[in-house]
Structures are given as C-alpha cells and as structure tokens.
Amino acid sequence: MSDLHALLGGTFDPIHFGHLRPVMALAQQTGLTRVTLLPNNVPPHRPQPEASATQRVDMLRCAIEQQPLFEIDTRELQRDTPSWTVATLEALRAECGEQQPLGFIIGQDSLLTLAKWHRWQDLLSLCHLLVCQRPGYPTEMETPAMQQWLDQHITHDLRQLHQQPAGCIWLADTPLYTISATEIRQRLHQNLSCDALLPAAVIAYINRVGLYRD
Ligand code: ATP
Image 1 (cartoon, rainbow, N blue to C red):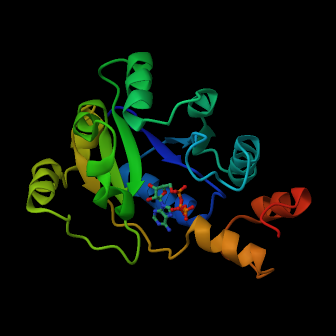
Image 2 (image 1 turned 135 degrees about the vertical axis):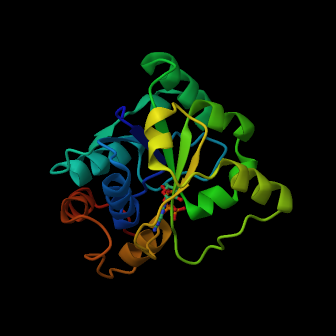
C-alpha cells in the first residue's frame, strides 16, 4: 500500500482537541502516517480571526511539539486572496505527482456545506475526502442530489484510500468532541478554564501573549 498523506485545513483560531484527537484516531484507523495542517488566509473583507496569522501558526507549532504525525504548511497564508482549497490541492497535486494518494480531512459540518466551496465538484479528482464525525450535525446531506453524490463516492474499503490517488469519501468512525474554537474564545474572554479543550502548550502560549482577552 502507498503512503497516504492527508491535509487538514482550518482557521485554527485556536487549534484544539476537536481538531487533533479525531485526526489521531483517523490516522490509526486508516494507516495515515503524515497530516499537514494548512492554516487558511482570511481575506480583509471577511470577519477576521482574533489571532494574527503568525499567532495561529505559533499555536499550531505548540500543539504539535510532541506529535510526529503532524507538520505545518503555511502556503495559504502567503497569498492575499481567499484560501481556495481546490487551488491548494492543485498545487500540492502538482508537487507530489499523479499517483500519490492524498486525503483532505474535514469535519461533518464541513461535509454538509461542501456544495458552497469554490469548485467543489473538482475536489474528488484531486484527493479523497476523509470525514471526521462532529457532534450536533446531521449525518444526512441537505439535498437528495448531494446525498446521491455522497453515496456514489463513499468507500468502506481502506485499500482504495491507499491504492487510488483520489476520488473516495471515507466516513471515519472517530470519537466525538463538542469543542469549537468559537466556544474556546468565548470561554477565554470570560476567564473560564479551557484545560480540557486544547493542549497545555497552546494555553501557555495564549496566556503568554495575552490572546483572547478583553
Ligand atoms: P470556529 O468555531 O472558529 O468556526 P472550528 O472549531 O470549527 O472554528 P476550524 O478551524 O474552522 O475550527 O475547523 C477546521 C476543520 O476542523 C473543519 O473541517 C471542521 O469541520 C473541523 N473541526 C473543527 N472542530 C471539530 C470537532 N470538534 N470535531 C470534528 N471536526 C472538527
């Protein structure tokens, strides 16, 4: 089997256990050996993350200090346009070649809104979609057409993820975490503890630089 390489895009404002732990479980289930975190660029006309791009990357570094599974790719932060996942995947595909199996990891909430993504129909020609469960979101797609699209591409055969470069959707059986970055920012603004929600090294960084305070 070829080495399956996967990517996780996000704003990571901040990164938390709802990102890290499902992905670690996914890696164990699927034999993933490398996950690249892709912090996204938020263009000026959109609501801005509270942390700067540099701080978001610093927090990623803190989070993965002891985690050899993860690496960081900051290419989306180097652009001044929105982070189109499809464009990033095209660039990565050009770099790794046609045969390399690539997976793009998303949570169930992102799967449900996939039809709003720029050129979403092209995604499966570039990668597999590896979907982590997220509590509180329906498992059915919003329209029959999207459900049909999903059903057409689902695989339950792990070998397909490793033997094909792209084209499959894997609904992973990952542990449920009701954690969101929004909740963490709110709790920190209220001086509430977030110890169980994100890595201690990230909390230490947040406290050191005074992020998410009023
Ligand atoms: P915010 O609350 O600021 O919208 P978020 O916590 O949803 O942020 P993002 O950085 O937007 O985090 O998410 C990046 C990716 O991680 C998305 O694909 C999202 O579906 C997934 N994700 C985030 N939190 C969870 C979670 N608790 N369980 C599973 N997947 C998650």
